[in-house]
Length: 152
Image (cartoon, rainbow, N blue to C red; front, side, top):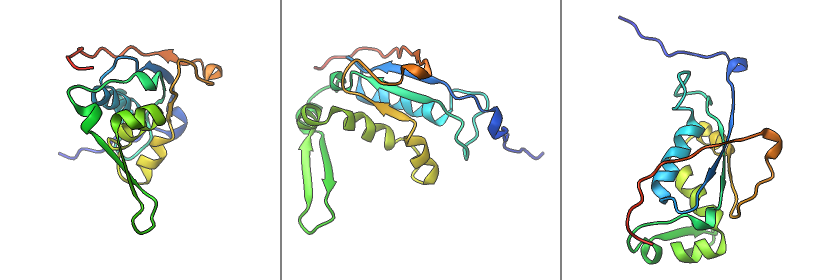
């Protein structure tokens, strides 16, 4: 019994735009939902080696939450490429400085580590405030139902 991967015609792939409000959402649960939508896993035409997903706009990125002591203990690292160029900062510091980067890093880590993943990552648009410049695409509001847990 041979099984073949379904290959949808490129011109038949319908791309939608979704808006997700990150206010009071848990970072990891939010990021997994966003990654699945960007990857296209919520569609019946999903193909692992193709871009079949939708665009996602995330608003209110500065209001995303983490549980426990992750605010003080979760560390984000970046390197300038120069000797001794390692910079580290905590979740709280990065959230006050560049809140969009938190969601971007969380989602990017859940995408494939290849050319397809880099292409999929361009379909994520993150904004720290409640507004976004993508009204012309007529995005649908997507409600993510996460179970609120304790924490901040």
